[in-house]
Length: 254
Image (cartoon, rainbow, N blue to C red):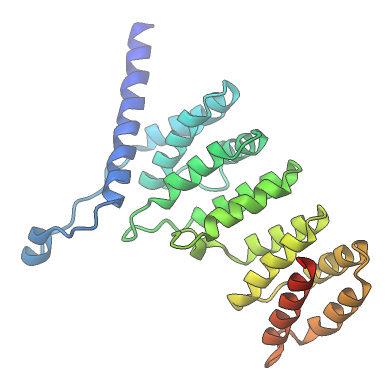
């Protein structure tokens, strides 16, 4: 029994050390002159063994169920930064995101986002965007659209390394979820952000936006929006769509 506990402690210590090393490296902005001048190979990040990654994958749900969410966040982050597993589709990561969405405040969700956003720019992780998508979708599924919008705003804040990871899927899920939840103004703002980065919404999103406007008794706006929608992808249509959304949002806040 003591040997087992000692092994668990050594395992958690190794993972914690790896995570601290990676995060501290992400704040280093001074180049290594010896690496630059002598053209030596840069330092490699510590990696987890496949056995350790599997242990993390099994531990995360147990930690969430026992309300040790912070430890689960640290383990998941270490695995994502140092090993291909767990992937965004893994049950353990989905379980963690679901557990975060059940909490009444965003402290833990922002903690996960903060750790993931500190990945060194020289070593970007291509699978972070699906994690952000899952987090926003989970908050919407739990009936917390305002928190989903807060997570989005956190990602979009000036200077955030996460704003480039807001993709078409995130925009679509958030616009549809906000409009369906009655937060139409917030949904229109996200849709405007989407058009600003030249991402064209899918046809299904049009129905959700129009229906939400009709529920708000904004019949004139709904008709104008539906009429303009087919032209958004045409030359000059994107700018007309932005102008229309600016007008809607401006009138809404008066």
